[in-house]
Amino acid sequence: MATNQWWASESFWRKTAIWVTGGSLIVLILLTVDTLPQIAAGSKRVPAYSTINFRIEYKYDDSRHAQVPVIGMKEPLFGKELSEQDAEALVKLGKLTTQSKNCMNCHTLLGNGAYYAPDLTKSWLDPNWGTKELREDQMVEFIKNPSDKLHNSMGRRMPKLGVTDEEARGVVAFLKWMSSIDTNGFPYNFKPIEQED
Image 1 (cartoon, rainbow, N blue to C red):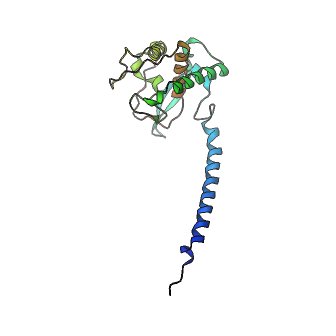
Image 2 (image 1 turned 90 degrees about the vertical axis):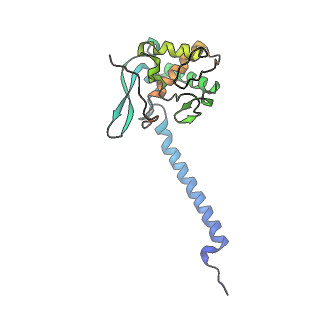
C-alpha cells in the first residue's frame, strides 16, 4: 500500500502557490517603490528637463565599459535658455507629439518600439545632421517635411505626419533631453556627432 508523501499533496502545492505569489507581489512592490525615484526626471541617471540648456556629449567610461552622457557647457536649444518649467513643457510637448504620431511604430526609443527606422534614443547626437550648428534647424525641418529627404543609410523615407513648427521644436527638445539619459551604453557602437570647439 502506497502512502502519499507530504510534498505530493494538493494542499501543500496550493499553500506553496499562495505564498510564492504573495512573496513575489511584495518583491514587485518594493522594486517599484525603489525604481520610481531612480527613473524620475532630475535623478542621477535621468537629468532634469533644463538639461536642454546645455551641451550633451558622450564619452567612453573605462570603468563601466560604455559610453556615458556628459553634460557640458551652456548651449541652449534654439539659442534661448529656458527655465525648468518651460523646458519641461517643451520636452513634454515633444513626448506627446511622438506618442500621438505613433513614432514607435517605426522607430525605437530607449529600446522600445519597432526597428524599421533608426533608433531615436541618441538621435540628437547623430552625425547625419552634419554639424552641431545646423542640427536644430535641420531636425525641425526634417520632422515637419521629411518625405522628400532620404536621411538614413537604410534608404527608407519617413512619411509626412502633419507636425506643426511648435510640435517639431518640442520633438527636438524631447530628443535632446533623451540623449542626456544614462542608458548604460545603449544603443551600442553609437558614434556621436563631433562637437569640439
